[in-house]
Image (cartoon, rainbow, N blue to C red; front, side, top):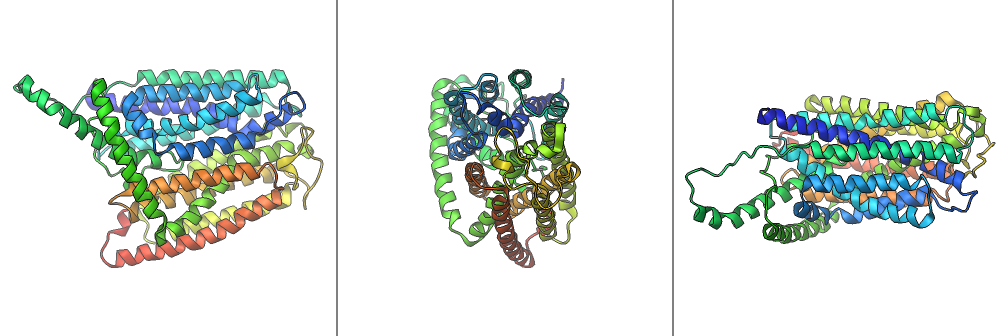
Length: 499
């Protein structure tokens, strides 16, 4: 197998492994609150919302340290270990206890940060400046397909169910655990890519010894820089690989270092990320980042809503009849369709967009406002916090399954509008040193997602919609302000259309 074929093989295996893992995990997240609510009539008492709040909170706090962890243990072992923790979290639902449920939430928050850091490393090692766009597109498409399979399984498995029995729960989560473990094991099929910088045969061993520490540090320098530019961007499910964060040359990788070299590399990584943290803190108080943080906060809030709250609302409405639980899976499928359609369309259009990013963001907020209005009319206010028996309440119109599923599509489409353009403008404004910008972006998004999952335990639906409308409006205005400033930069000579 040629070196290029081996790298493409690695990318495909990476994408398929993530497809299996997130088929299990995203399906688990979509139905978690519905399942937990059915358990609260037993000795178990917990909240799927609180669990997701813990996951996102720990994830945001763990982002800074995980590149050093990946540098020490290596990307392949990091991927495998993280996959085991994902599988452990899903397996907890087979026979859940409050202590194991919340403990697993903490571990998976850490594992998620490690997983996406290692994924960025692996993608970078197996790409160059000519193939990074293609490879990120392949990975992204395989990852997004996970939204279909797991939710399709829920749709058929829970067809005609009004209550989730112990047998139903165990069957679903045993299947999801096995699917996640299959994806985890697939990481071992990833092969070490051929080194592009092979030491010449004529070099003496003394020269090699003298250069080993320097080469280890150089490799680590490139590795850490690549992590900074990639892992924060690629974590976003909507990134189509078109932002300037991908325009970064490959590095030889950190394979084959001895234990002393690993400790040397980890110390260097710690210093590097101390510098990254300092830059990120300085960046937080700049005008542009403060404005974009409002937009980023909105993406965190609506991420929580469509990934956890909305499916719970659908599953709680008794007037949907025997399809109420299976509709959760169908909702997830249509969210995925909206995500893939929007991400693909705006990723392609970004290369030849003469009108900038504002029209896409405007489309996104209009689509979301339409979705919020229809949800407000269609869904009863107590749906997010309804008891295990569900709710018989009505909103302003008779609950419609068709409207509910259409809103799922709109939520996914609008989310892709915001995320693709946020990543694009961050890559443009901070193209020289994008790592701190993406660090702030993911930190703010994760923190706001954690806060939103927490208040979802208490707020009625219309209050949650109001919070998102307010943040969405001001986030759109703030994005427009920054985009107009970006246009002014272009007028002074920058190549804006290339972003």
